[in-house]
Image (cartoon, rainbow, N blue to C red):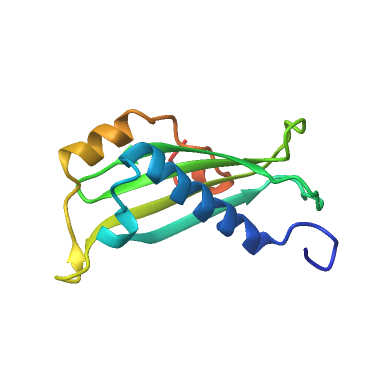
Length: 136
């Protein structure tokens, strides 16, 4: 909670992280941990659409893959309220890079990773600054 009795802005990054960890287990299999293999966040952007008040029930977060590169990929997010509240409180985008922890450098995504990401592909979330940067 922040000084205005809303969910604090930094909490949305935690929502993204928790959703990503659970999604990775679902997308890539529970036997494979991309975190241990090496996956780094290199960029994050969030549009806060409406203040979210405190609720005892958890927020819901939709996460999907919106772009895949040679070594990186982008995830889109939509943060909604608890079950029964269909309001979208925030949208966001996170870019991750596959990283070789031993060699301390980015690594290319393998075919199984690309296939898993393709299976959960969706359009990139439109954020406020995208029009100015020619992304929309």
